[in-house]
Length: 368
Ligand SMILES: [Zn+2]
Image (cartoon, rainbow, N blue to C red; front, side, top):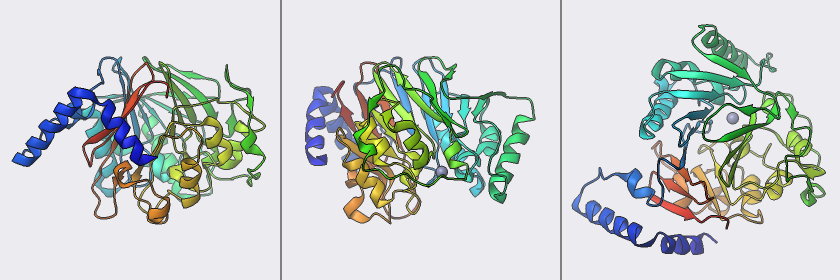
């Protein structure tokens, strides 16, 4: 599937892209390394009309930056703390690449280290408008989680930021996209979204998982609609909650882009979710040794409508048998290179995914 995709997409890139590739090749041959990779990467995109989504590499945490055509921005999670602000620096670099100088909304899915941990460092580096979260920390017995929660509370107590505590069914006040809350603080959408609600055959073969007691099932999950495209991000929502949402009927419906839950870790990403939402593209924000479980990658790859699986890292655990092909991986094994993936979405439903390592992008046509 991946080989034919490459051929098809290269064909679809058309004359402009062919020239861009040729130019890029020429520049590379001449030793110019600083050609405009963004312009090169998105030949069909118009920044005034497209939605840009950066999958920042925070080494197995989450940091996903959305920049709407209206110039508004939404960051889902802030990566890890520590490392001299490594993750915050990477997020700020993505923001600058997108041409923004502040982040309007920072959505914290839950209070684990790899999601809220980087918030104080980020706030030191770039202005933030509003924080969005699920409410209280529910894992107070975990020392690290409690520490990160308190640091986040301290940030909020400065009075510099607005705060929204979101519930399932709420729509976030972001211009240029519709962002509807699917899950929050352990509650999920009580009924199917308009047009959804079909019986889900994947439930029969999907066992009932045990209830997860951590912050993960409290994750603030969001369905983002941009024109004809639907993009799903459920944070680290676990399989027990996936079952509540998806069985016996699919309350979400179909999506185009699935931001793989929980970094592709095998406590999440069940077939009951993935095979019912039938994404065209899945993007896994795994680290080299965090997330990217072989069984989860296999569930994604066997999803009925999948065109491509993308990963931030080659998963060491999954090996070559389960990982995506190299061109769909931002960071292969080896030294920390911080390569990111960037998705550029158009309102007609077409989109592209750019790999900052290879400087190549794959095009996905509208409605395929
Ligand atoms: Zn996580």
